[in-house]
Image 1 (cartoon, rainbow, N blue to C red):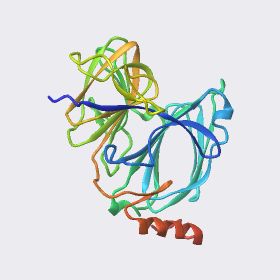
Image 2: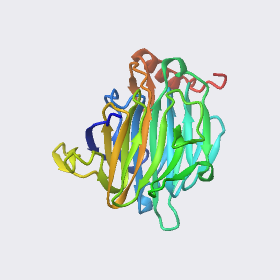
Image 3: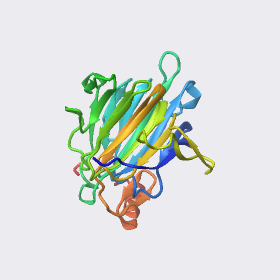
Amino acid sequence: MSLRPVNRIISARPTMEGAGVRLHRAFGFGETTEFDPFLLFDDFRGDTPTDYQAGFPWHPHRGIETITYVLAGTVEHADSLGNKGLLGAGDVQWMTAGSGIMHHEMPQGDPAGRMHGFQLWANLPAHLKMTRPRYQDIQAKDIPSIIDDDGTAARVIVGDFWGKSGPVEGIAADPSYVDISVPPGKKKRIKIDTRRNAFAYVFAGSGTFRDASEPFGVLTEKADDSIVRESTGNRSLVVFGNGDEIVVQAGDEGIRFLLASGQPFEEPVAWYGPIVMNTKEEVHQAITDLRQGTFIRKSA
């Protein structure tokens, strides 16, 4: 076994998106090599409706997949193809934008006014950029849960993990996306395919992602670009190097994190906001399609 080193830890940065939603972005809209095949990760949470109620009005996507995971509150969604739905606590939506879609997402808080969810963007390889759009809406009850002997719990959204398979299927990067909770003081070793890039996003509790022989804490990049040595806590993105397993040591409150890994495509990436293609020419064509009203290809 080879332990994956922690290359760096990044504190998610406060960001405003949509019509005024306050969220924290762990990565996105920049160099994507170390996250390939993933493109962006947002943590949107708030205790008051003013943090999120403006939502994400109608906007386009092409060339990517968006994965929305809701922990508290609801997210109402609709799109240009006539699809509508409501995501509740524990639900997941995996949307393949493919050739192009217009949609909106409107968060609503729970009875106490709280909203919490995550959105992960996954890239599509060149040969699937213009595939037909599709949705996979997964209810909480259909996501398999596992509790290990030491009390570690996992919800498997996609991929194979500890003998369970997530309900999301047919994803080009063959990713793994798991919600993991490790009890207070426990140490857990978790295997990850050596061919995959991997990261963990901590959203509750604290701990470290080092072996017991390593110093407590790691170098952490803060939002103001200063660097400190500390344990991994809330809204921390842990970027792993190469290896076939990680080790997490939970702190006094335990630790809960999302663990994502995927096979990199190693293809060029051309960005224009929610449109991600392989070349600038393809991006320009998408913009032209938007202006000319030909962005949605119902027969794609």
